[in-house]
Image (tube, rainbow, N blue to C red):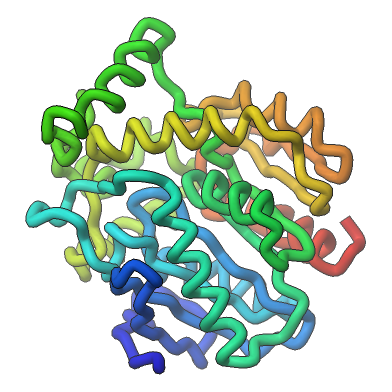
Length: 311
């Protein structure tokens, strides 16, 4: 049985009928999910990236609602208002990426219980793209998948990559998995960084939208990843890279100014995805769905065409 959860509708700016729920995963973790819109063309399960939360996708839900779709968004374990793994709420941590698949199973069960319209589609950003790809490869019932800058590899200097793998493997052995990864800490990016020089968006209004959400509701904030998360992410990216592309129709949107995820694995994956297409957005940074109005309109138009079998 689901319970009502908070939804900061004033900051989200989503469709007016938004509802949030507490869910309990198979391993007993409390996560949060929200349903927006009453579109009858299908339901989009929206998988956010690391550090993100439901309210950040209120405007995305409005864009999808305008195109006829219902949206179901999740707070992954360890972020948003979902249960955190450590007393320091700002550490982003999981021990293994399989944990996120338990969250996926819980929100799919919610979609079924609420009778959300089929078909189900995926819209995934960054870390959500890693989780989403695994979900598709598991054979979960998604008719199509739209990815935005998917984390199929982590951008880092070549010299630091072997060190990151070693740290990620050894940290749990020595009880250090919850320590912040090198170069990160307990600061929330959008509050600690100014708009000029940020790596997320070139649109100042969308930057302010993200900034004021976390400023108004600090419990949504997340800082850097743990060593455990880093090791788990590198392991999952490597495991996914070794698997063939699914047959699910897909589009991947990627900004030409991308600086957060490793673009090499994205190009490689999409080159081998027979029913997949790579869409490049000139000048866009990491968060294409939160870029300039022209980029956002194109992104949601292309996603809608894919979901309707026209992409």
